[in-house]
Amino acid sequence: MTKEFLEKEFKKMKAYIYKWQKKDKGEWFPNAQGEGSEKENIDEYIEDIFNDTKNEIKYLSLYFKDMAFWKMNQAQYALLYKEDQDEFYKLFSESAEYAYLELLIKKKRVFYLGMSSVGFTLALQCLLKNEAKYKVVAEAMLYSINNYIPEKHDKQGVGIIISNGNDDIVSAWFMLDLYCLAYEKSYDKNKANLPKNYTPYDEVLKAWDTTDLQKVDQLVYKLCEIHILKGIRSGDMDKDWSQEFAHNEQILFPFEIQVWLTLREMKGLKNPTKFTHYFMQEPLAKAFPLHKILPLPNIPHIELLKIEYPELYEQYLSERKNG
Image 1: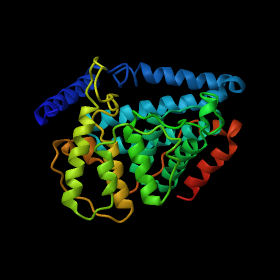
Image 2 (image 1 turned 60 degrees about the vertical axis):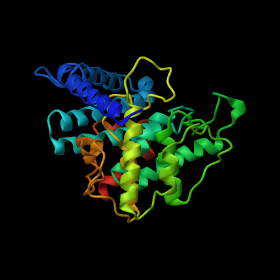
Image 3 (image 1 turned 120 degrees about the horizontal axis):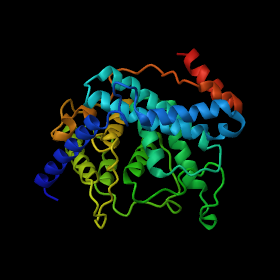
């Protein structure tokens, strides 16, 4: 694909998202009547849980999942449409917490979350520089791969949340491999469903901790190009790439690139102050790495955890008590 083609497609992506955020008020985004029908549906669901706790509490993780997704879209709406950076960070932090709580609950059950979902949750924790939660998600991924039993197919045990991975969710493999390099961890590559095409991520991994800032910029450029390529919204799926980033909340959000840059900062490495690629001049691209750690968000209805997951509830309270 030519640079001209990708730049044209990127402009289409921006136009699509801005049009969606402008026109979808009353459904996904607030209007004069309230927060929108999507949020109303989520509110009705949590009311059902309150009214019939014994039967509904096991579905609390679904509420967390829906809230994580809704909050992420509200966060991006705040930044891209309302140009409210403070509101963006507040909502982003809340989305990350909901996603993390969903993962904690589901990894206690025989439940498949998928590489795309867990990879995105991993990214959120890293971008917030919450190292403890970042490690929990990464280790859950490693556990799933290392303990996956092929003969059992879809009848795996507790904690096999991504099976042995998905070869087409390449960014998740990239972020997990970055974690392994930075923290000297590993997984069983004979069990793993590894990407068939790892370009240009493999090149980045070889130089992830380079001190050559020009090299970092060059690699970021390549990652931007592949993000755009995999974000193209098209009905034609007969391509030699997967539309990995074609989801609304990922199209303009180069989270996998920012995970690399954030991880470098966490390990004491410098990053360029400016980047060559136009993607890195966009609001979501410039939002990370963080300049300061965000306060922990408060999650409404968190007391529901006490019923089936008291240890998670105590962990939540302890985190906030300790600052």
